[in-house]
Length: 234
Image (cartoon, rainbow, N blue to C red; front, side, top):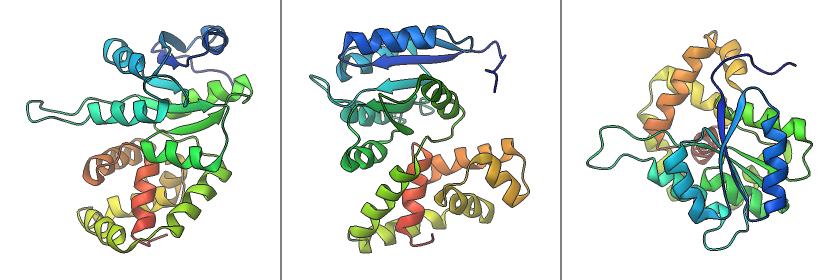
């Protein structure tokens, strides 16, 4: 599949405390016509400043770093994007792909719960990393079947009484169509798959998903899925 020919480039920030990793990722992404590396950071604290000044579309985030680790940095990036009492609208947060050498289940779950849009190991083949960037830039998550199973297993193992009630109340605010889209997201369907199943156009599905973010207080599709799972609907 050829890379997109749009003149609008995907702006990417690389966050890793290893200079060799940053250099390798920079060289790899520098050869893509539709991707622009707008900056690098060596830890989570630098990442927060970099995002404010460079407004990347996608952040490649390591987990274990000095000062502020990647999971805490991801949480803060998304918190910074929420509207304050003095702002008229929320800022658009960057999509975050956690890129790490640690594949342990707890890291997968923690990364997704923090709001990351994807989780990849650093030994992932370069073409797959590039494809992942393009995918999350379009608003789709990058979740391997193993990561999805791990997340669902963890959720089912935790107490769900209060969380189920809270999730049900949030879902009550949705329209009938939004509810259908939320259930489809909870089942792990892509925008294209939802459009086919519900006989909608892909732009219409994207608009519904965007409204779900606002109404459910979610920052990515994984958190929509968590709400649906908490409510016991899938």
